[in-house]
Amino acid sequence: MTYELQMGVVHAAPARSAAQWRLPGLRKTILVLTIALATAPATADEQLRRNALALFGRLDASPAAARSNTEVELGRALFWDARVSGDARTSCASCHSVADWAADRRRLPVDARGKPMPRHAPTVFNAMHQPMLRWLGDRKSGAELAEGLLTGPMGFASKEQAVERLAALGYLKTFRAAFPGAAQPLSARNYAHAIEAYMATLNTPAPFDRFLAGDDAALSARQQAGLRAFVGAGCAGCHNGPLLGGTTLQRFGVTRDYWLETGSASIDQGLYAMTKQEEDRYRFRVPMLRNVAKTAPYFHDGSIDRLDRAVSIMASVQLGRALDEGTAADIAAFLESLTGDAPSNFAPPRD
Image 1 (cartoon, rainbow, N blue to C red):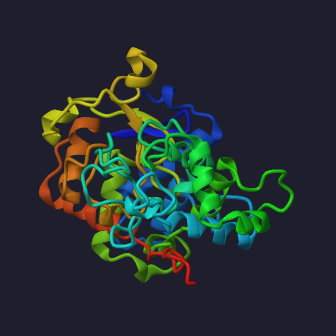
Image 2 (tube, rainbow, N blue to C red):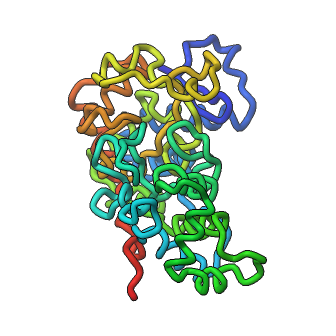
């Protein structure tokens, strides 16, 4: 199996003649590094590191422009305040808890109206690095996401009703401090910007990042083997970049219908439900793999509980490959190296 770069993504490619391998400089470099990473000897830590850096890069300390501490702290208060919801019992943290690494162990979360949401809740850790959010990639920023949630899962009949609730809870003074130049500091838009500012601080550097920075002991021998297997199987074709995914939309079920492997209770049409374009049927945003070992269950419907099983399913339905148990376990071990500590500010603010 060989690999090539298409539209910025490394994909499995058929064998080619020597003449066909006359690739432009950058494309050829990425190709060579990908193959090298998949085949490097287990002891070649430095070469493995260089090749991994070329494929995945490093996670930035902060994905957003600097915000004031006042705005971040306002967003933190709002994220954890269950009173800011239609039922006065549901907060952002209700579906993104500390125990679940800012995700939700339930297959489908429940909104402020008491109804199950249509898809599994992904983690908000590192989420602001992504160019699109939610399973369909239909929100382009944390602020757009948060503002829309007010009249969605948060259960308000209108944004105006949400603003009235914020005023009744005494938030006006804090909004004025966070948005001193705004004509109307207390607004749904500024609520959303404050939530986004807070979420942008929720980053989780992990052992994999320490390995990329030069710490040979950060990854075990099995995790290094799993990294090679991850690339060798073709997983990096979609799960690339510093988040190992999170940046593209892809069909779930390229070589086999996904529900035949996941046993999903219902078949989700994916982006097709919004666009009605046939090419969008079963297309979802590729999930990032940061903290994936802590954020089960997996896939858009939370249909699979075990990470190694999720790895095997992805190899089958996306790549047409049957992984043996050892290889799937090695890849799962590598994915555990993407687990970082919960940020110290991922908790309700102290009074």
